[in-house]
Length: 325
Image (tube, rainbow, N blue to C red; front, side):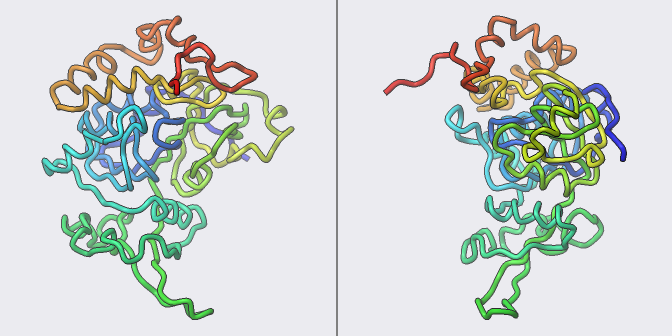
């Protein structure tokens, strides 16, 4: 069996071509492969097609930097650190980006179909809502459901009647099979086995659904260690194409058990995203103003990073101030 090729984050970003269909691991502000996001921006990728169960800080940065042409999801924001996806909204209103709106369950159904090798997945999610209104089918309105792009289904959904138990109508949600899954993982074995120590979200399904997979690992560990608890592993090495070992690779999002979400940093990026000019100034400081991931960490500073580091017994940092009642 094969194992992933070990490369740098700069090399990994270089594999992504303008117009590629991509998706990311994690959930809102947790376990996002942010170092890869920054590098995609530095390399000025354009016209990317981003599909994800939900958006987050990474989406806002890519959209604000003008990297995304099509975004398919259900929501974008930074949880309590900035509830709105302001860059997503602004680019959509300006017409610079196409948004295809689904429910959370629809997006999971699409990845499940892709993971199982099926053309569609049946679900009753959000039936009777305007999510299914043909007037809001943005890809159809843009003339992109003509079959010329094999990654874009010719319909947003279809409806079929249950032929087995007579339970009525169901939605058939088309499979999603991104060109690339870009995944942040807690640990990866030296032969490529992927472990996520906490909530796995839809990461396992994304890995199976994508044509190629890049994993950013917080640390690389012996395969023998991962095999002691195989139920915690979400993918084998043969399913992974490229591996980047990159501590703090999810910052400013959190990596449960390793470091907390950098609340102040995300708040600052959210405030900056309220206009394109202020976002550009923020990007000049934190993306283009550093030459690589190590330079970014040096700019953040060891004292700040250590304040976020999780206590190994508790799984979260005991050094940062939290909310009070």
